[in-house]
Image (tube, rainbow, N blue to C red; front, side, top):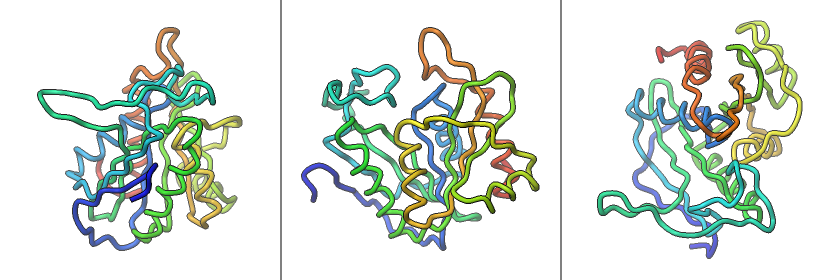
Length: 226
């Protein structure tokens, strides 16, 4: 076991080139909420958890995805009804279609790349060839826009689903880094950005409407009823 990152496997999963779907806490929690919904809707099975000494229980940065070299957060565990839980990344699997659902977690500044690379190592173990990342970006309206790791995918998203590449700028945190590093591993990837307006009090406060819009497009892309 690594001193900084380790994985606990719960069961063998018979997946055939699953599509990885990634979400994490972020702007209005859109990615995390969508993954939570998919796990419940598809009755996905927990197959692995990734733990790391780079995962703070309490983030000193606001929002949590805005890492800082001098604000590494506090370590610890959460306690609820006499149960203990470490901060972790969870991997769930479902079939028909074969999906690998990843509920991400933000590492501190020092561990971001190491954690993202370990997640992609697991993708290779599970024979992942394609990935869909779910996130939010600031903007008015209920539309979504997209990004992709190659122009062919962009053209497909435009022609089949009427999506546009409106977002330009930084993509912070766990999901952004996994999305970027996947290109270096030749994993074809798209990102669906749900438009949302940041609140003045808490950037990660839930936006259920944006989640609903993302699910509508995700349902079409995966050809399943969500």
